[in-house]
Amino acid sequence: MSIHIGAKEGEVANTVLLPGDPLRAKYIAENFLSDVKCYNEIRGMYGYTGNYKGKRVSVQGTGMGIPSISIYVNELIESYNVKNLIRIGTCGSMQPDVNIRDVIFAMSSSTDSAINKIRFNGMDYAPTASFKLLKKAYDAAISMGINVKVGNVLSSDTFYNDDKDSWRLWAKFGVLAVEMETAGLYTLAAKYGVDALTILTVSDSLVTGHATSAEERQKTFNDMIEIALNIAE
Ligand code: HPA
Image (cartoon, rainbow, N blue to C red; front, side):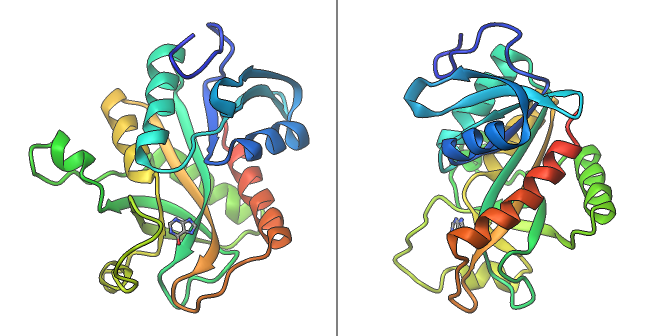
């Protein structure tokens, strides 16, 4: 057991899918995995291990934001020896050609979080995806006929901003979309020498103000889950 994860040694697989919402972890376990065991209920942050096409895979909720995902990622790596961490989440588009329901692979992550500023004594670190997972995911998406966009995302510490237009600066520099976790995930994966990738579905657009319905979100979420499960090792 670690502080926030109640699994026994060996109960977490080498590859863990990381949805922010613990109920998504439950949904994935119930609809995509067989022989499922729930290994964590602490704080309602469900974690499950099961089988997908003969592979052992885990799914662990992370909560929202860099502090919350960092707790789970630290413990998964340090206490459970996890080697591949695949975040699956939603994001808000910052580009006119990134549409609602599009799938994005985060090649890198910018951030307004101070966590890395503090960690690197005021200097900048560039949180980057695992090329191994990114290449596998890209190849899987192409073979599944799913159109994806690959690029830089913003991991923001705030969902609600005082300045409604603050995202435009990042957009000008080509950032595709905003979410709240990837910079933390990629930095910790690099620190521990393991592989990480973020796969996102666009749930809303800061450009147009449109948002997906719950039903639409579910369908595109399924595409993203299948990509993630197909690249699990
Ligand atoms: N901001 C931050 N995170 C998000 C958003 C957003 O607009 N949409 C989905 N996740």
